[in-house]
Length: 129
Image 1 (spheres, rainbow, N blue to C red):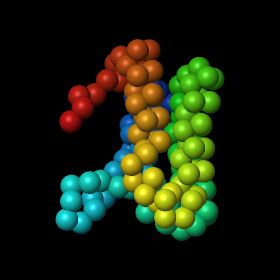
Image 2: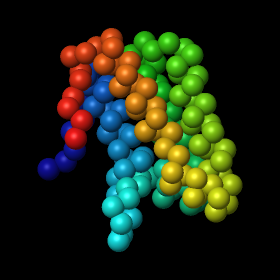
Image 3: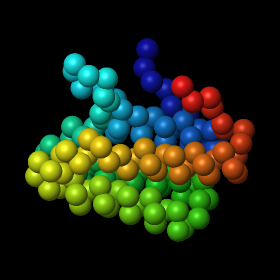
Image 4: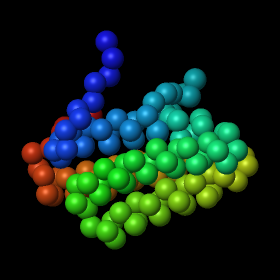
């Protein structure tokens, strides 16, 4: 049984894809012995420079989907700024890796998209668990 994501361009399909990407990047596994969740953004970030660039590209997909929703350009720039900041600080050895654990640019960008969808496409609302 595999994960099946919607492929449509409708707001609900976009919401589900963005939520899945954010979960993969920020919350796909738990640090053993704790309840703290991390994702590929943290793990791949341990690979100097390349890891941060890969996760920046994956995070940019979230912004691309936001653009397809018709979000204002200033919001898109704000979201790209978060990814750029995360990438720049994340590239610093050790300190950047610790930073990646706590600064979740993709989660922040998902919240921005959710606010937009809740305001402009209320039918996509889901009950948060």
